Each structure stands twice: as structure tokens, then as C-alpha cells.
Amino acid sequence: MHTNVIMSSVTSTCTHQSTIQHNFLQFIDEHIHLHDDTDFFSTLVNARIETINHLMPYQTNNLYQCITSDYAQSINGIVPLDSLASYYIEIEKQAIELFGNILCCWAEYEYYRIIQRVIRQPLTKNNNLQRFDNKEDITEVVDQVENDTRLFITPYCELPMTLSNAIALKTIDSIVKKNCYELLYFIMLPIHGEYVIQYHYKNTDLFPTLITTSQF
Image 1: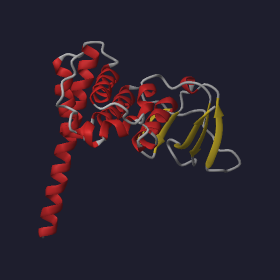
Image 2 (image 1 turned 90 degrees about the horizontal axis):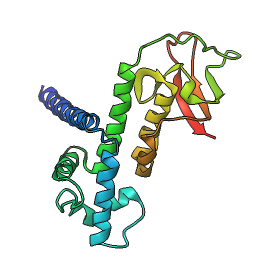
Image 3 (image 1 turned 45 degrees about the vertical axis):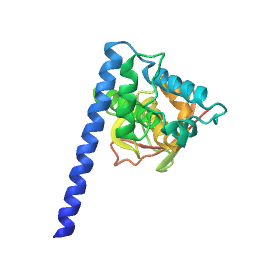
Image 4 (image 1 turned 180 degrees about the horizontal axis):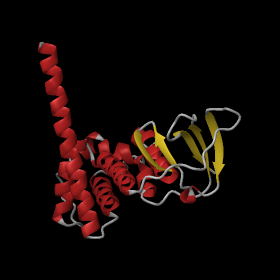
């Protein structure tokens, strides 16, 4: 009984935290659209990196290590960003409180942005998917992923989405969040070009599951 009460409390706390995080990301998204400020995160991060390097030169070139170093954490959200409006540091403070650091917040925002795009897209049935030689795992070269209209699900999200959105989501979850945050500067750009993809698909599946991708 006591275990159930504890688990219920933990679940409630996690759900509450998730709601606050979602609302914060929504607030940032509204700000970005209202002010046409698509470079909001890169501007904030660049300014903070500049401050860190000014106060403590010869920091690492690794973005994540620079932002999360002991010294950086003593000034993040505290030392003013003189070149920016005051609301930037207020948002940075909230991002640190909710996500640990501004880079994790940025990654979660890009993830949120993709999911919102997916939710708004019309859901259509895949008409041009088929299994080859009764194989369930299929490897395929896609010339221009931006023009591919098929819908996929991913191990990270069960919402069906276009291939370009699925690749972007996979990049965030499997690469960016493994401390390769430099890619955030590029994930904002549309996914395009030639990719090799592998997906799992059975005739009984509504949508194939994207497994791996690599760009030529």
C-alpha cells in the first residue's frame, strides 16, 4: 500500500514537471513566432559562450563541456548577457531550472517543434510501401528525403511522420542528446538530400518503423 502511494506521488510529480516543461517550451515557441526570432537559442548560447570565454579563456571547444563545466555553471543564468535584452537571461534561468542547462532546453525545444509540426500535418495512408522478398527489415536509398511523402514511426515517437521529420527526431534523440549539441545549429535547417534508410515493416503494420539513417 505504501509503495503504491509512493509510486503515485512520483508519477504525479513527474507529470507535473513534464507539464511545466511543455508550457515553457510552448512559451518560447510563441515568443519565437511572435518576434520572428528563429535564432533565439543560437543567439543566447553564443552570447553565453562568449561570456564564459571572456571570463575564463581557453575553455574546451566542446559546446556541452563548455556550458556544463563547473566554472560555467557558476555564471550561467547569473552573469548578465550585456549584448542581449534582459529577458534572455530570465529565460536562461528558467531553462536551467527545468532542463539543467540551456543546451538541453534547446534540444528539447527542437524536439517539441518537430512534434508540433507532425501533429499539424494531415494524416494520409501510405500507398507506395511494400515488402521485398518477404523481408521485414528493408534498406533503401532515398534520393531526396524532403520530397518523400511516406509516413514512418520511430522508436522515440509513435506518431506517424514524414521521413524528413523522422530523421530530424532521430538525430536529436540518438546523436544530439549524446552530447553532440553542435548539431543543434544545423537541426533547425530542413532535412534534405540523399539518405540510406533502414526500416522495419510488415504487411500487418500501419506504418513502418524507421531504424537507422545515414546521409551521403
